Length: 356
Ligand SMILES: [Zn+2]
Image (cartoon, rainbow, N blue to C red; front, side, top):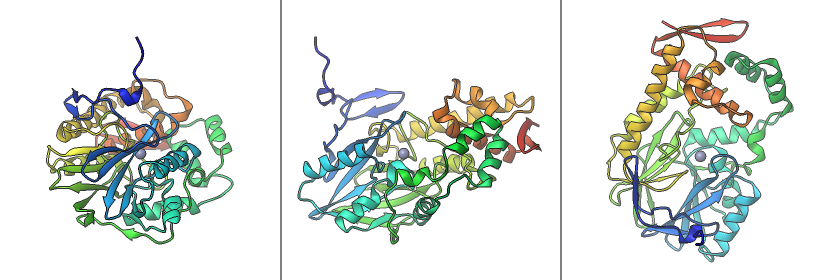
């Protein structure tokens, strides 16, 4: 008996937890473009960590192609692009690069690609500004606000010192220079790409003005990280807006996406293309609300952000995901505060939340 390679893996559709995966377990190898629909191809780039990959969408656009999302600026992603550009995309020009949101696994090679093909970058304005701001923010040590944020969540001094030791500006280490000019996408815009029209629909909570693209007549949604089939997108109370409400924004975005057709073929940035949009949105919504309820019960005694990891994640959090887990815990606590189910008391810079 031999183990089938991924290329031979079954393309038989299957259904799991209410979602159907029309392409089964078939996923693109490095340098491969799987046709998903007329003029629409699926490629995948490797990224480190638990994510493992990011999906890239390639749309026919006249003689050239429009690229959606780009991977990190690291050699495995550059090599993945070289394989695509020498293989299935050989001889094609790039008419534009669209980036769904500013996170490095999406915008990382946008500058490199737009430079190489003399192509414009298309984004929403806030996402472009965030990317420009973060790539420009280089300094030797973390700003004071970062220490304030870590202390608020309950980090001990040893962890804060270890984090500070890593310096500041890791964003620009995996993102090629972001173009100084861009083409703005706005909610409701209709983008003609090839013979398809894509409607821009924005969401937030995972990032400030995340663009999804909907081909209403073709029944296809390019979802970015706004809805993922298996994992939940990180929703973090961020350093840039520590009094914000990302989880409230995220839940509102889920409700907004529920107004879309349930029959859309959804192309997520991580995981496999699927149908069953409403089932997935319901599961995401219920997951967060269940965790808010569990957290509420846990706040019978005053708790800090880091005390809540067990309740929220049900597993130990290692150092590599400590920052994301902290942001997620703080987002849930902040939401309970805004729902007036918890109050916050600040003692020596540490934020303690208690149920009311
Ligand atoms: Zn992502």
